[in-house]
Length: 250
Length: 351
Image 1 (cartoon, rainbow over the protein chains, first blue to last red):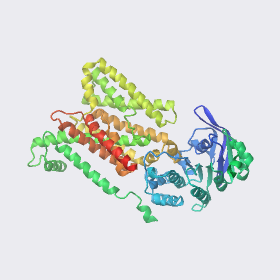
Image 2 (cartoon, rainbow over the protein chains, first blue to last red):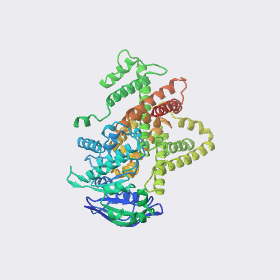
Image 3 (cartoon, each protein chain N blue to C red):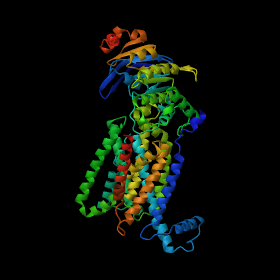
Image 4 (cartoon, each protein chain N blue to C red):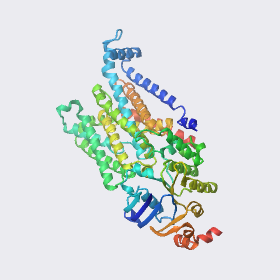
């Protein structure tokens, strides 16, 4: 069980944003994807979850992800977006329940009793059960973020791609998020280890949640290894072109 | 926990649906009853009862009443209802698929295509004997579908993922272009332009059972297919990328739904001319009352749109009786202020 990315490139229009990426992520790994704005982090998550065209191979458990049926791919991989526009004000509960679409057995029908129970568990885990009847357009940014996280959990996939899950969260929830993600990685209900692949801008969160760092710069992987190595001041200086260490001290 | 999870569907939804259904039947009944001759409600029930049990004209009902009821009022009201329902059903879907509360299949050029088809028939005086009185509807329908197909093909040639902005823009561009051709034609052949103009304004006058017989099965089949897609549509309304990530094939779903919506719109425009607004107003009001979940929005849009159209048709034929006002004008004249009220009232409340 692993994701293999081989000689992969991806572009928006004629602009190539990822160049010749090679990466292997094993089941149960907790990977931090780092890099400055525009370095290709979000694109990497999109390509690996199979929702963006690419050159080269992206194999999930041996199968090319872009050739899989969307529903089958979504059973293996979930992607939490950076943010979501609210076009239609579903309730929190309805939104989280939609996450169970891929994993629930029926093609056409609605959610079953087990889906409902699971969605409730996800809402509980993300601390939004008391918001369940609120409409999405009545939520704060941080609350919406937790709804998206719960919906991603509800998808029940062993690979979770999270694009800046800490956005809009206050410091307490950021700390809690780390604990939740670590809990979620050890999936006791199914007795497996889920993989987390996360983009963070808060390096403290990265340190707490992840064990491996993959650092991108201008669409290429410049570091792949242990997180303690990846977050060293010299490395950060190289990645962000900025003296992170002295910024944090002040 | 099981107890709380069972009670999670919105309380009172059942009651609201029941009230809506009763209200809609009531509107339909009023629409059938009223006109230049009012048919007593008890006669309506007597006639329907007699028809169902297979007896002739019931005692105490004038044969003339029965004939007005059965051959004029009833099919006309039902046609209006089905057309209104079909239009708002397709409006509801298009808005979710394109994540745009102002979208409808009119946006994609169905109505302008249909109008151009009608213009060809009227101006060139084409008639195919086998189609008899259905020449205008068939031409309208075919041209409407052709325009949408053209819009979709063009959109997918330009943008392989068929993004919403592309679809809407291409649809609008093509609509305007097709409208231009039609205006050109109608100015060149101005002796036909009044007839064309009347068709474009929309009317249910002289719509009979033969129209219902085509509309009804189309509506039912399209409704069932869309209902089966309702959960996908819920997911699609979060945008294509999120839908893809959650396991919905956005392109496939969008294409199928657009085809079904064009069919619904095409057949409506073909039978009644271009009637705007109901496809915007009805789904919007339904979402305000029931929330955005499509499992409920789709059937309720059909009912609300249908009742609204039956009501507008009633007004169009009674307000300046014996003259008839184009029903398209009525829907806009009533619909626009009401829609604005609903839209802005809820906005104010939120602020």
